[in-house]
Length: 216
Image (cartoon, rainbow, N blue to C red; front, top):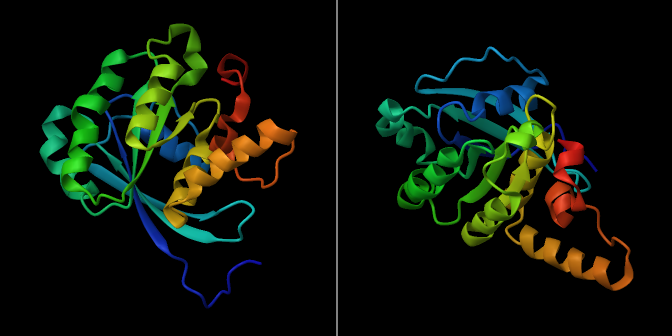
């Protein structure tokens, strides 16, 4: 059952973090407006937009206040003011650029650990997976990092619209239900036992069991 029109939809501040050029702005544009533009310029400081998200199979709605932050080093001191009170942080790297991934581990993740709430929901997006032939960060390496920091993980392509909706649905699910990841593990165990899916959630539940080269 959908929520009453008179019932206030809970808000959730989401920030996308990562180096300049990894595709944060393109991810947001694809998710919010369904568009893609090769000529998107780098964000200066930060920009803001919002979208109402209805979590599949739950009937729950959440208003995502989405902040796009600059990745350039000269803006880093400013960026912390935009993510300090966020409930969700999505760390974005370019699968072709190893440095963009290492900088998440060495700078951006330590920054949110230092400045944000301990219960912050974290997502990890390996963007530009449509260019898998140029991959320099393996999916296994990224998943290992995601597991280490308790993040939901998604391979994404703003250009091909791969994994974008799933990324935001996953972090929204985890924000509303801190036990979301535990439920995923239970589902995985159930599938391995009897081959049937007891509950249908979304992309990251069963890690999609997909071949990224086929779908990206």
